[in-house]
Amino acid sequence: MSQDHPVKFGRRSMLKAGAAGVGSLVWAPLLASPAAVDASIADLFDGRVAQSGRVTVKIPPITENGTSVAFRVDVESPMTQEDHVLRIAVFAEENPVPDIAHYELGPRAGIASVESRIRMNGSQRIRAVAEMNDGSLWTGHAFSIVTLAACLL
Amino acid sequence: MLMIRIKAPVKATKGQVIELKAMIQHKMETGYRRDKYGRQIPRDILRRFECLYNEEVVFRAQFFPAVAANPILTFYTVATESGFLVFRWVDEAGVEAFDKVELEVV
Image (tube, rainbow over all chains, first blue to last red; front, side, top):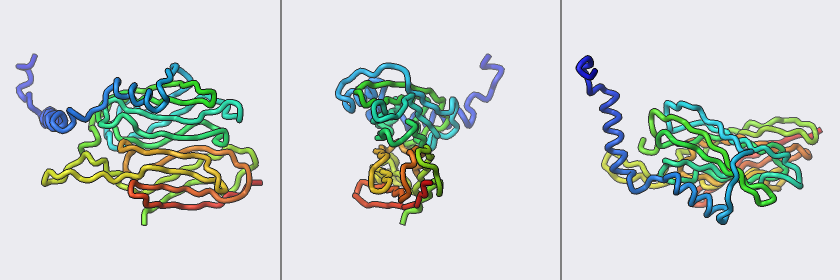
C-alpha cells in the first residue's frame, strides 16, 4: 500500500515526529502516569478508596489545542448541611504533574459543579475525585484525543 | 495590575443558586518551557483562589501548572443576603489580586 503514496514524510508526520522526539527528550523523566495519579489521590485523601460513580467529567472528545481545554465536573449531591461535597480534585494521567486543581466547596455552593480550562499534554484521561462530608470518595473520568499537546509550547 | 473579569448577577432572590464566573489575566507559566537559548523559563503561576461572600469563604481553589493561561472558573453559590462578593487570587510569591462585586438579595 505504501508504494501508492510516494510522499511518505509529509509536513504533519515530520511535525509529529519532531514533537515526539523533543517531547521524549524533555519529558521522559517528568511525565505522570495512571499510577502517579493513584498515588496523588492516595496522598491527598489519606489512602481512602474512591468508588466509581456520582462524578461526571465533561471534556471535548477531540481537542485541537491542548493549551486550553474547557472541562466541567458535576457531582451528584443534594448539597445540604447533612450531605454535601467538601472537595473536588482533578487529575491528568499524562501531564508532567498529575494534579490539575483542587476545589473546596460546601453546602453554601448549592450545586456541586466547577468549570475551568486546563492544559493537556497529549491524549489522555482526566479523572476527578469528590470527597463528601461523610468521608466517602467518588470518582469519574473522561477521555480526550489531543492533536496539539500543551506544556512544551 | 492584572485584568480581572467577573460575571455575577446584580440581583437574586433569597435561596437562589447563582452562577459566578471569574477570570484573571495571567500567563500561568508552567516552568517546563524553554526560551530560544534553551534556558528554562521560571515557573510563575497563581496558586490559590478564593471567593468570599460577606467575608465568609464560599469557594476555594488550588491551582497547579496544568491550569491554562488566563484561568477562568465557574462555580455556584446560594444567595443568602445582600452584600459583597470578593474574588481573590494569590500567586507563588504571595502577591494578591482581587475584585469585588455587589449583590442585592430580595
